Length: 348
Image (cartoon, rainbow, N blue to C red; front, side, top):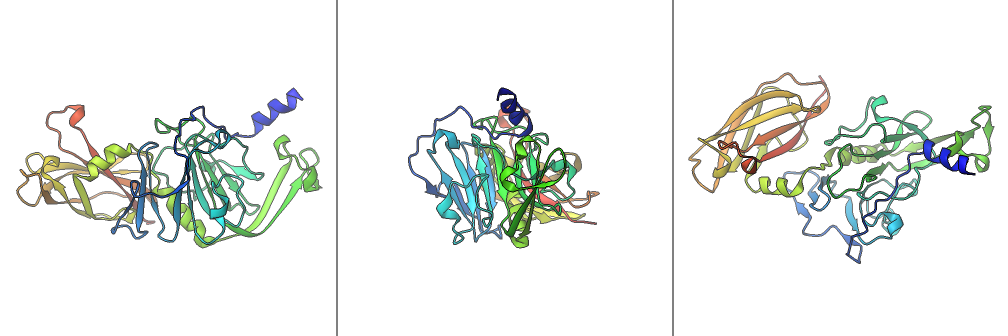
């Protein structure tokens, strides 16, 4: 019995809960006005941020977000659920890794969740050719794509490499794409012969193969949500957002060289009427750097327009970031600040 127990843990990446049960809110709540803001520059309509867990993301305008507070300790105590209303998913919240197949959703569990992953074939993200371009570093050993027989991904289990401070080490993000006509077949580990599902023990090595028809439109929506998730310091980002606004390009827009960037920043963002702008690829490699110039008198607390044009050799079909550095002639860390905005390099 002990041998079987140990083997189970070796084979399956358990999504364990953390030790922090400090949530005090007693009610499940919809996205509240403190953390969700209307963003007219965002075609999806709303952005969300949670300063405690350093999570920010963009939402499709036909989805909703629910913060799940004060859950049972075995359920991780807190979750962020994004889902499409009117599908019945609201009645099943908090959504987790074993939610019904007809639902598309994204679930963020900063403390983890005490269960094993669903029965499926798994693939490591770095072995696939078309995974989302995440804005944070992913732990490729612990993260998995759950795949169908034809190799298409029906769910993602994403573990950050460097989770924010208030996350437990078992925190994760799970995303599922709705599917219909679901079926499964099990093959014996030793013989490779098909066996009844009731006898299938995928934890011991039997091969559990799923087939289904995925909702292609919702697959793209789920991908867009995953690509919008940031795990940066939300408070610092909010402070920077009060000092600088980018008008062109918009977040997650395709960019090509030469790229003209326009926006406005308050006077304290500048020094001698300029500040530094960088363009980097998905790995943080610098593609271009130049000083943005104020288009007016910069010695003011008001917003002053700026403009800069970057020329670069773009990588093919991947994400990148524009980084706007606050001018810091003192060199003191306490005065340093930056604002980042995701961009996309389209296929060549």
